[in-house]
Image (cartoon, rainbow, N blue to C red):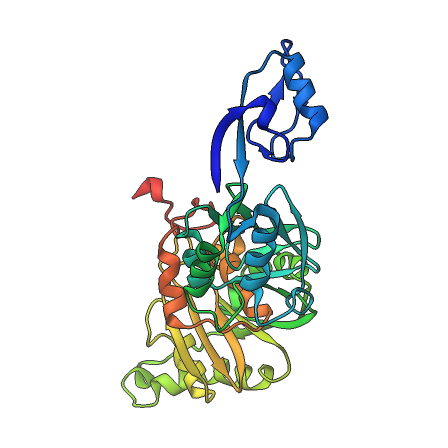
Length: 357
């Protein structure tokens, strides 16, 4: 594309590069439009001699066509509707991708980066795994110049992992969740209510329902039990039994406790394994929320929530619940990547706030 100033009398048929305003600053001609003979007359009345213009060369793709091509390619091999997306545009070199349903935004970062390495093309998305409402623009393609060489577009679209769409919305369909709370009998009501209210509110916002709340009393161990080989089995048996009863009946199980999980060999992770399940991850580089546990029993995901889950403020639970409720796999590597940006605002519910350390 040629972008240069030309004499006004030769500008007809070219693309106007900049807005044309009169002596009072009022716009008379809009940039990006094809200059007509009557537009030339307007510029002459304004005593303009030269005007910035753009002219396409052979092999160029105009901004709107290029934006639509890039947007559609980023969604291949799927159609927008199957990804719960609606394409809006093109206009002024821009195509927006709009969510058709409330859900969780999934982003494939490789093609996003590949497109953005190309000069003249930009592609921006909302935050990966964020909850988006129907009608929200979740991504936008913008072509910067008025046209791009076809080769530039082809090269940009050839890069990155193209096996999956660059963006998609996974709808938040109704889910059933169970809460199992463990602790000492004396603190039962306080412990249960502290977690139940906060977690129930979160679940409602994500189209999920808290189907059951069960309290499991911690086992008091005698001196003889401490020295026996069955101490672990004695301590974890009630929680393991609760997990076996609950998993398979719901889509997700939340584990909470009067005391947060302190060790990979603590009661909760041991109970998951005793119930026939596996532990995916213990600990998260997110504060508040370091003492997180993730596993599964009988194919049902089990999320051990730290004490910060009692707070309405953003914490590790908010980062993972949307993913888990739309059945996205969360591996240990996914948890590890949360460390970048994982230092969140402190919460009052924790026993030792940062300011006191």
